Structure formats: C-alpha cells, structure tokens
Image (cartoon, rainbow, N blue to C red; front, side):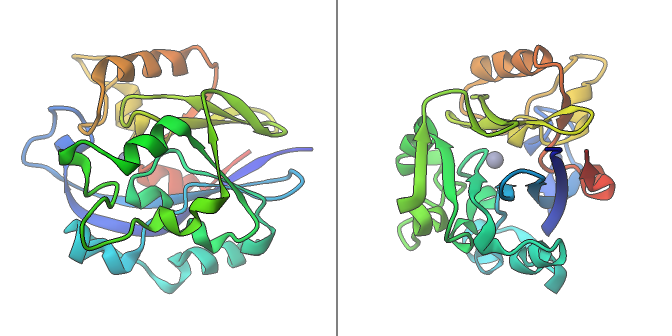
Amino acid sequence: MTLKITAVSVGRVFGLHKPSFTYLRGWGETLDIPLIMFVIEGGRFPVVVDTGADLSRAWEHHRIRMEQTPEEQPEAALRALGVDPREVGLVVNTHLHWDHCSNNDLFPNARIVLQKREIDFARRPVAWHRRQFEDLPDLTAAWLRAEDRIDALDGDAEVAPGVSVVSLPGHTPGSQGVLVEAGSRRYLLAGDCVDLYENWEGDAEADRIPSGFFTDLVAYEESLRRIENLGCEVIPSHDPLVVERRVFS
Ligand SMILES: [Zn+2]
C-alpha cells in the first residue's frame, strides 16, 4: 500500500488582509489564497481532508470575494481525479471554519472525523468568531448537514492505515493535523495551524509565525513545536505553491 496526496483547488478567495494569516505582520498588504481539498489515495478507499467552502455563502455571510471555476467545484474536481464521492470512506476536517467543512454532505458514505473540542466550540464559539463557524442567526452551518456521520475524537488517533490525526490546538480549540505515511515520506496536512509556507519558515524575528486568527496563542506555540518533533514535511492549508505542486507522494 502506497499512499499519495493530491491537493485540489476548490475555489480561491481574494483581497484578504495579510495580518489575518501572518500574526501582526504585513500591514496594508492583501493576499489571494486557494481553498484546498486534499485527497489521499492508495488505501482501501479514498480519504478526503477538508471539503472547502460554499460559494453561495461567501459574500452574503462572510463578506469574502470568492471564485470557483466549474473544474473547482468539489464534485467535478474529484471526478477529474477518478474519484466518486460515494466511494470516499473517510473525511477529516482539520477544523470547523466554514472554508474547511462546507461540503461534508457531498460524501454520503464517509465517516467524518473531528475533535470533540472543535464540535463543542463550533456550537458555541466566542462572539468574535461566530461568523467563521457560521453560528449566525439567519443561517444553519453547512457542517451540520452531515452532523449525523461525525465521529468525535479526543486527541490523536490512527483513522485509516497510514493516516493519523494529530491534535494541534491554537487556531481553534480542536484544530487537528493529518499525518500521512506516503511512499517515501511522511507528510503533515497542517490545517490552518500553518496557513502558508511563510508561517512555517518564519522571518528574522521568529522561527515560526502563527496565523493572525486564533483562540489560544500559548497552545498554538506548543502545537508548532509539536510539529517539529513529528519528523515530517509540512503542507500548509492555503499556500498557492501547494496547488502548484499538486501531488505529494
Ligand atoms: Zn481556519
């Protein structure tokens, strides 16, 4: 069994403020970023990590300018890979921000794996984070459409052969990464614990840079240190270079 990860763009968002991604850095700069769905193939069934956003909600509910070509629609993107959404046996959401979990209902036969702490927080986020979790008076959060298939975990676990979730709190209370033992390497799909390569590579002031968006900066630092000890190559959640490279094996 040799696992392979493919990074698929399922939309792009435009004009985001840079300090939302690089903590207290890049004032006045804006950023265009991809939304990425990761597909892990080579096991008993395909595994999907993060399911992207719902384009129809982008502007009205999130005030985000988003674009999605027909090829970037999640179902079309999967079919182009030769993957039928019905054969996906497992979906992992790194966390429950709307741009990572809004198409969970596309996978009728998948077990959906999340940290229990994330679910609890998403149901009752702090006031300033309600929009990201779609905890809004006029909206039912998209992740709730597939709520009955969620398997809530408490910490690290192997969820399929060669695929493990690793608890990485900080960006959100129940953020998790996905460690994949691929052919020649071990990769970590870091979720928004590492948005961009820049977050992982750091700058003159700090060897790692957290996202500008978080619930616990102390836990966040521990999570970044934890990743260092995993001996893996880190794959960020929103870096355009990840889509360009596309295949990680
Ligand atoms: Zn996020």
